[in-house]
Length: 170
Image (tube, rainbow, N blue to C red; front, side, top):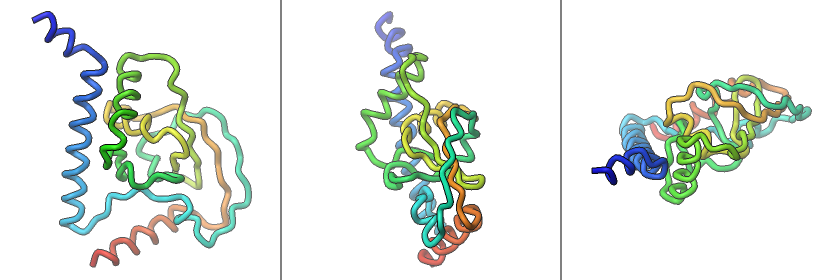
C-alpha cells in the first residue's frame, strides 16, 4: 500500500501518466481533424513570413504570455499539434523529464524562447515546456520574448495559410 501511495505522488510516475494521456488525446484530436478536414498543425514562422520582409528583431525580455497566444513554431512543426499535444513518441523522454521537473517545482528549467510577430507567438526553444504547461492547465507562462517587425500582419497571413491547408483537404 505504501508503495502505491508513493508511486501516485512520484513526479516521474505522474509525468508518464500525463504524457500517455496527452499523446492519446492528441492522436484522437488528429484523427478527428482528418475526418472533418481540419489540420492541427502548428504555424511555421518561415511559412507565415514567406515573401515578407522582416524589418528588425527587438528583444523584449521576460514576459508573461497567454498560452493560447502561442500558435506556432520556428522549426519543429511535426512534434506537437496546434494545442501542443505531443504528436510523436520521440518527444516522450524529454516531455516526461520536463513534466516531472514542473510537477516537483524544481528550479533550473529556463523560460521558453518565443518570437512575437504581431499578436502571434512562435516557439523558438521550449516546445516541451509549452506542451507540459498546457497539459498542467496553466493559462500563462513566463517566456523570453523577442519581437519581429514585418511588413504585413501575421494574423492575416496565418489565415491565408489556414485557408490554403483547408483547400488542400477539399
